[in-house]
Amino acid sequence: MTDRIASVIVPCRNERRHVEVFCAGVLAQRMPSGWTLQLMISDGHSDDGTRDLLARLSAADARLQVIDNPQRIVSTGLNAALAQARGEVIVRMDVHTDYAPDYIAQCLAVLAETSADNVGGPWRAEPEPGAGPMQQAVAAAFQSRWVAGGARSRSLDHDGWVDTVYLGCWPRATFERFGGFDEALVRNQDDEHNLRLVRSGGRVWQSSRIRSVYRPRAALSQVFKQYLQYGYWKPFVMKKHGQAASWRQVVPGVFVAVVAVLGAASLFGLPAWPLGWAVGLYATAVGAMTAAIAVEQHLGLATVVRVPAVIAAYHVAYGIGSLIGGWDVLRHGKGRERFASLTR
Image 1 (tube, rainbow, N blue to C red):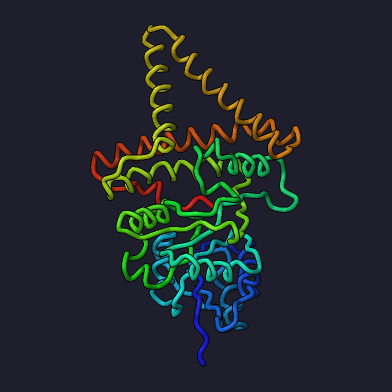
Image 2: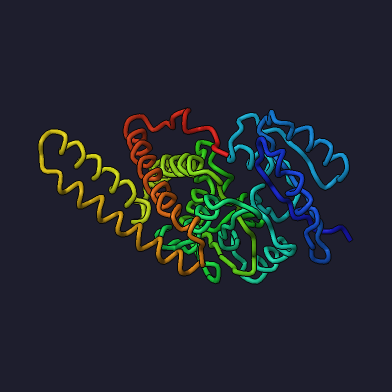
């Protein structure tokens, strides 16, 4: 009897430092009886030696296949891998995430138990071993549901129906029914696909048994660029589906707009106290979130003092990005090239 195939699809560009360890971890996954693994890495014209390394790895293990992604963005890479995948189940993975040895096995089990159209685990962030206090602060703030506006994806023990999950695992039939990833989006293609799925009657399940660890950016500037893009592309998703944003997607943009308007007003001689009140209120909220994070996660002082800057980078960058993206949606509906390059 021929084994059933689970195809892992992975977008990749300039990941020479990480891709070999990633591939070894995926290829060592403990597959259930009757299942075999196919690993599809879609390379976006890497120029740091990643492609040569992948060629050597694929020559050593026939389960690994490398395909070309000339557009160099995540959505086109996922679709290119999806087009050549042979599996009846599709598993999305990311190079900068570590996976439990039974990650794929649990995905397959949860799919069978729930009959969902997509399943995934919580989005758990941890710094790399030996990381400095900045990456520790980035991971700590990322994991806080207060910072994320209550997103269920950050809740590590949540099991149930959700609107979206981290990464994902789908029966191939899901893509046949709902289509692939939107190649007009540089960011938020996962959220858009899940939104399309749910709005069309599909179901998404989050399981705490599907365990992985995401390694976040290590520099504040990288975090700012990452969330600037997340914010920028969100209005394009909302325009496509004619859906209003949730409050946690709107608040950062509203805050940035209010501060900008009050700041401009003070330059023209109007009272400056409203600006000071708005900034002071936000600073108080950031302080409260920092204190909660420090207590919950038992952070050292060197990490704690960096958390407020990280929280502000998340919120302010997302807010600025969403305002620029919203303006571009209203103006001409096309994304700017400067927001089309990946930030890692």
